[in-house]
Amino acid sequence: MTASTTDFALDPVCIRRHFSEAAATISGADFLAREVSSRMAERLDYIRLAPEKILDLGCSHGPDLPMLAARFPRALQVGLDFAHPLLQEALPERTLGQRLLGRNRPPALVCADAKQLPLAAGGFDLIWSNLLLNWLTDPEPALREMQRILKVGGLLMFSTLGPDTLSELRDALPDRAGERVHRFIDMHDIGDCLVRTGFSDPVMDMQMLTLTYPDLATLISDLRHSGSANAAVGRPHGLSGRHGWEQARQHLEQTTADGQFPITVELIFGHAWKAAPTHTDDGRAIIQFRPRG
Image (tube, rainbow, N blue to C red):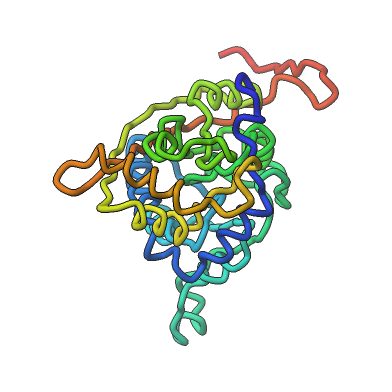
């Protein structure tokens, strides 16, 4: 990557623990992911696609699976996440009649790491990944795996967070004692990763979203209940102390308007295709012979 991965180093064990602990509360606190999912779905309206097999990569508690099933009712769905308690929440409720008649076939659920997918090469037509890449120190290994399991002509559609996300909170919490707010990877660096990992025709865009909060405690509660607590490798491991939090509260109060302070979220959306390979695994060029028209 262009930027040093040490600037974005995250602790995967800590991330898994946070999401596992938040499994019971995440459905009431993932409003940002729901908004991002809705904006991603709008982008699907402009893409002609009839997938037979879909992977929801980083499916969390499964809220995007019903939408994908309604949009592509004939497709086989697989939901994958590395926090097992979230997958347990993703199991859909089915009536006895549905089970007996085999209707509303539930998605297959897999607990695995995005960097090491236990899935066969070339098996999926569409990979849908909503706010997964921002939880990876380096997205390149995961993108290589996504490219591997897509069919030629398959589509990757994803969203992630950009560097300006939580900038107000980062400014309010000085990093003297350690990294208190995640750092997020720039859109252009992700685009470079897509090209390096073999994707073609990448299309990316960015949107700025502003959330408002009445106080710091509500913001921190939302982050924790959605599993989004601090997991930076350089995070403080001791007590932060009341003085530091009081300084942060006072800093944020200086930006309030009508009793609310703003929090910036930089949304990055992208999609790219898997093109036919130009080289074999051992580096030899692939030459295709076609009859003349």
